[in-house]
Length: 301
Image (cartoon, rainbow, N blue to C red):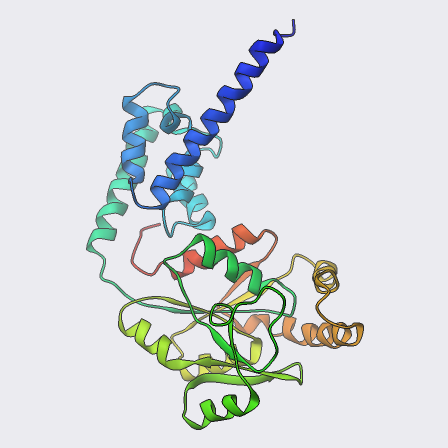
């Protein structure tokens, strides 16, 4: 039998409310307003239908700052918890294992010294480096993104001092003369890009981690000057998808598109020079994996 329309409507409203309640729990954990251990204990002590209890364990783990999808999946495997399991539905042994992991992780975070890391994100043209960086800027405000200087004109929607420092050729030359760049290069045989070094040095000295989004030439230069930097190469799912993204954004002429695609073939061939490779199938997932690399203090598995 089909339930009456009024029951279906009420059920739909209840489902929406439940999803919102779980989303709020995840937000609280991500914002460090609650610990994941607190959420788990509330799930086991409260009603079976409470948002803490109906939250999937995998979602709870991915909500923890710095514990991205890759590491969360590894933790789930180590704890022998299936991906579909909800916090309130765990067996007694699984509860013990999860409680011990979360308690130990909290203790390690409290004791861990503050360290810093420079993560360099590079990849071929149109792979989505800028999109991933913008997502990180919006969703992970604690991450410090380095802002590059460039002699190219701004694209629609780009903001001075947020996306780039847009400078003239004369200004760029003056910055080189003053030794202000960590690296600089001419890209696509046209515009010049450079990374101002003073803000990065200050941030690292203060124990902060920095994300630097630059081109392949710049990544090589940074590695030469700062060997401790972690180089991350962003890959497209397929070559066809890379072509689609480049043509679809419509910011270059057909001649410029062809030139950039030839450059992309050369850039892709250099991926083995990098420490980590991330495939940009989904912007949010790729961003989370990059942020996970920036989580320097020891956090366990």
